[in-house]
Image (tube, rainbow, N blue to C red; front, side, top):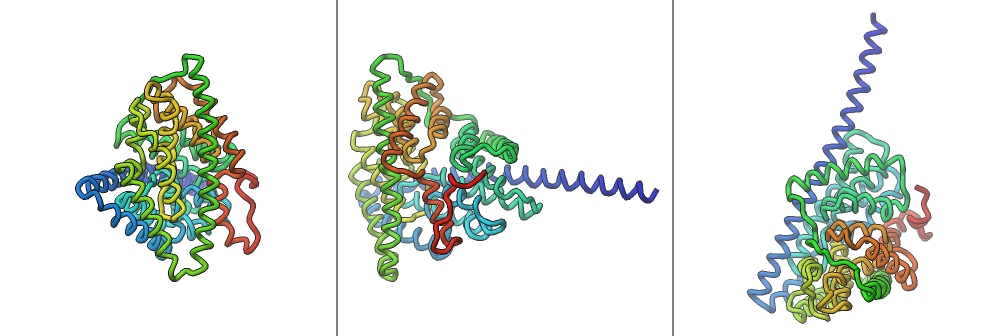
Length: 439
C-alpha cells in the first residue's frame, strides 16, 4: 500500500507540475497581449497629444523635439541600457546568449517598462518611431519571465514565442507574427518551438481581438493588378523600393557606428550634442512637411492605402526623419515609419489615379528591402490591408525588393544590429551572426 501510495503521489505531482507550467505559460501569453494593447493606446495618445500641441503652437516642436531626443537617449543610456533602438536586434541577440544572461542584459522587466516609457516619450515629442519593434522586445521579456516562475529550460523558444506574439498583437496580424518568428527571428523553422509560438500568438491575439476588436491596421483596399502596365508598376515598386530600403539599412548601420565612434571621442561634450542635433533635424523636417513626418506615419500610410496620396516629398522627408531618429539611439522602432515611407514612395510612383495600388506595392518592396525578409513583408502587408486580390503582385514586389536590397546592403539590418549587443561577450572578436547559428 505504501508503494502504491507513493506512485500515486509522484503521478499527481507530475500532473501538477505539467499544468502549473502550462498555466504560467498561458498567463505569460495573456500578459503579452494585454501589455501590447495598453502600449498601443499609450502610443496613440502620445502622438495625438504632440500633434495637437503642434497645431496650437507651430514652433513648439523646435523646443520639444530636441529636448525629447536628449532626454530619451540620456535615460536609455543611464537607466535602461539595452533599451536603445528598435528592440528586435535585442531579441535576436538574446536567443544567442548563454542561459540567464539575456534576462539580465536585454530582457529584464526594468528594460521592458523603460522601453515602453521612453518610446511613448519619443512619440510625445515628435520622434519618427513606431511601437511595433519595441513590442517584440517587450513580448520576449515578458515571456522570458515564465522561465523564472517555472524554471523552464527552453529560453530561446520563449523569446521566439514572445517576439511573435508581440508582432501579432501590435498589428492585429497573427499570421504575420508566426512568419516573422520563422523568417526574421530564427531564420529557420524549429519543430521544438513551433507549438510555443502558435499557442502564444493565439492567446495574445485573442486578448488583442477582445480588447480592440477585429480590424485591419491600414484599412482595406481592393486595388489589384489587372492591366498590363500595372505589372510594370509592380516591378518598379519592388525594385526601386528595395533599393531605397537597402539604402536605408546601409545608411542606418554605417551612420549608427559612425555616431557611436564620434560621440565616444569626446563623450562628455558630444553625448548630449548629438541627440540634440538629431532632434533639431527631425523638428525642421516635421515643420517643413506640416507635421507629416512626426510620429509613426500611420495616418499618411493609411490615407495612401485608401487612395489619398500624400505629397510627393513625403516619402523622402519621412525617410530622412526615420533615419536620423534611428541613428540618434532613441528607443523606438522603424516598422511603422518604414511602411509609411514605402506607401508614400509607391503612391508617388503610381500617381493620383493608382495611389492605393502603388501604396501597397511600395510598402512590400521598401519594407522587404529594409528588413530583407520578403515573406514577412508580403504576409504582414496582406493582413494589414486585407488586399487578398493582390497576392501574386505583393509576392513579386517583396521578392524584387529583397533582391534589389542585397545589391546595396549585404547583411539583414536587424541581424547586423544584433551583433552590437553580442560583441561584448566575445571580447575583440565578432560573434557569429544569427544567420550563421544553428537553429
